[in-house]
Length: 196
Length: 319
Image 1 (spheres, each protein chain N blue to C red):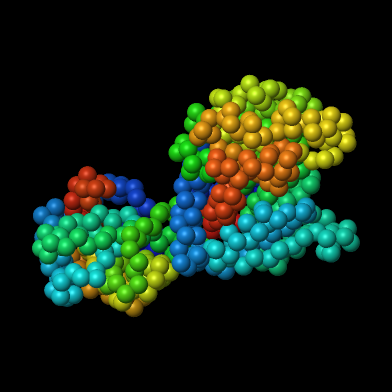
Image 2 (cartoon, rainbow over the protein chains, first blue to last red):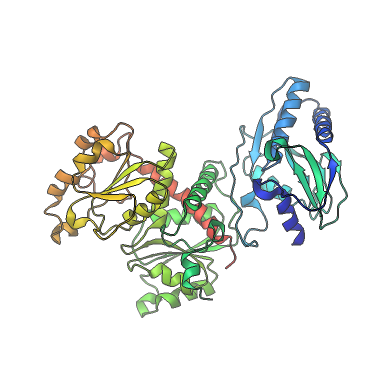
């Protein structure tokens, strides 16, 4: 259970991660920019273009990341890929195990997902439980042709058989460490930190 | 298992709330958060798969000691849309007829696995008694003349959805306010959100000892028609005339009925609402109920979303 609590604090339900006593930067703003550019190229290469593609960002920080990837795909391929927003609160596997119930957020998928290739976007991949919930949520919207996973940071410690298709940076971490992704849209600055 | 009264009535935050007994102890931010959650629930109801697994494995018991169609079905649809198991219990044909007490009945339901008890009862305070003793989350689906918080919440939701805000709205609740739990919960909810409530009706049907800041009494409906954003006539029961509280249904309609003639004197963007069930031709004319300004049908469908949001808020918290 300790791992789940950590997973929740790093996503924080929309609030900025609180400043911690010992923080070590592992990605600068430049590193984040380059990683996203590379992931965008990989998405194009892997799918041989961007036809039939839909980017879906997981609330909270997956959404701005998905938007930035869409900007790059437009820049490189000249195609505007639809961007959706996914809230997984009602699909979590720990409902009723917390003292307070997390607030549900809205989900907005602008197109019918049936037959589309979905690239699910999140900031940190940790236990894989959020992604499991996201897969269930997405499938309630239709039957995608395929679902791929893009994350800015893969910190390991998977508890489910889930692996990412696109990774910004692999970061070996200890269970008790906290990975904080900061983004301009939600936190004012870009960067990734490890906090104890 | 029993909770202290203060824990029942004054939960520290929205997210730690255990019960929904009335709206008088809800803060503005708590109500806003619930209305926002209901909007998300509405999205789920609009999807091809109208079901989310949020309350899988939870049991919701509808415990109705009084007749109901829309509220009971609405709670049932709401619970099922969140994948909860639903058990419907009505007092008729149960051990209640053998004299089983309310508390024992509630404890039995919890022993059978109930996580949430939705209760309607003719006695004001019955849901509070269950909340203090049963060890399950309790939702008041109407108790006596006291409160009907989920109806008020769906009314707030419908107004906010249609008009875009609640603060500053003028809402006229017309008719038998004295016997109306819907009106009482709406007074608390609306004034808490910064709306003004005008309780309008014959003096015999107004609860003169109800005093809440932001609310006032009026007797002349025609005098306030031009200034209100919402008109909500309440059902007039035929017994009220027989009991001498109103002279006759016809005279009531003359002075307080929301007629086609009065509809024409309302602002064009004013909403007509009704908590149901209606008495067409008494408190509301049939053509008013189906007019463009009527949102009565939306009230019913919004009720499901509000109840989903509330069930999710309460059922997910360990007792």
